[in-house]
Amino acid sequence: MSFEGRVAFITGASRGVGRCVALALARAGADIVVAAKTVEPNPKLPGTIHTVAAEVEALGRRALAVQVDVRDEAAVAAAVKAALDRFGRIDILVNNAGALFWQPVAETPMSRFDRVMGVNVRGAFACTHEVLPAMIAQGYGHILMMSPPVDPAAAAGKVAYAVSKFGMTLIAHGLAGEVADKNVACNALWPATLIESYAT
Image (cartoon, rainbow, N blue to C red; front, side, top):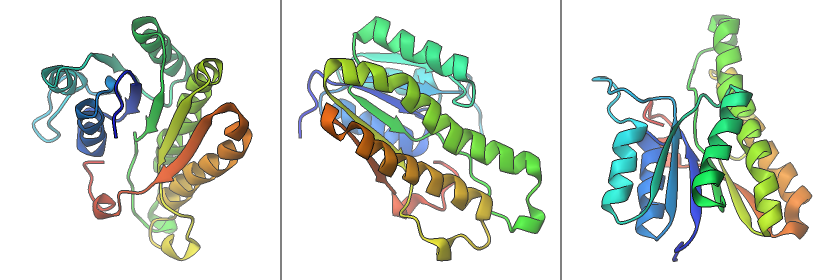
């Protein structure tokens, strides 16, 4: 499938699944907005928005590296504006940024719960909220949540994380119904082979 002429905005794109998606879409012809928090190299977590942007450009596509914490509404709005100023459109949004914390409820501090919910649910909602008007105006868009099917049996031992990811899936289901008549699609995709990787 060709994505020639399309622009993809990918969160959590400095490493892991986000980087893989960015490079795959670039190979298919898309220009890429590499959105993530990491701007400086970290020996334990290799990859930054700049290194991935360079990889995209090496494939012959245009890239824009934007630093953004998806929990910060103003930062998300600024990143989306920068992308629209640079490319004039956003065709694909991949809500990939994620916080991972697997512990039983009794061992989950509220600060951890807030972080997981903030990054996974609030972040995905904020990015979608900011990108959606441009997609509706241009008459095309595809929003992708990196989240699993809702399965209550899978939540034990990682309730905070499961609730946050199921929340992303419910956003996808609800939004799909809201924008079906606007040529904007919304889906949830779960890279099952990587669900236990901290690289996501």
